[in-house]
Image 1 (cartoon, one colour):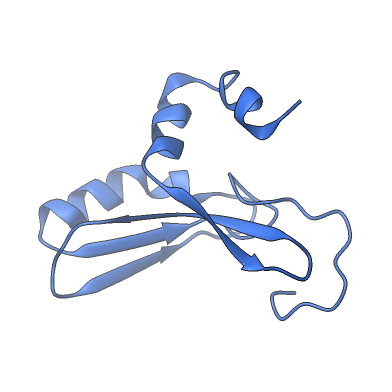
Image 2 (cartoon, rainbow, N blue to C red):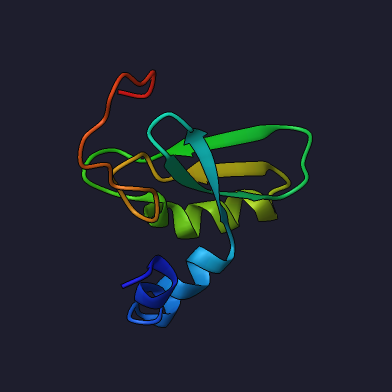
Amino acid sequence: MAFEDELELLPLHLQDWYARGRRHLVDPMNNISMFAIVEGEGPETVVLTHGLPCSSYDYNRAMSMLVDKGYRVVTFDLPGYGFSDKPHQVRESPLF
């Protein structure tokens, strides 16, 4: 099943969360993409990094509050979590 087909099986709030972000190829050697959301246009940036085993969605409410307060906010899913790729085996990579 393709990744896009699996999205249709998710609850609507997670489909909406995915639609707010995009995937970025961060490790071409291993073809690993990470999911990230960037919102807000403030002069200061806040980066929200999840712990293990969580995902960027844990910051859904906090992100909205920070954007409303005038911050630019970035959150992402680490490889293996959330909407980022889940590598089975990784050759040499600066990410791991």
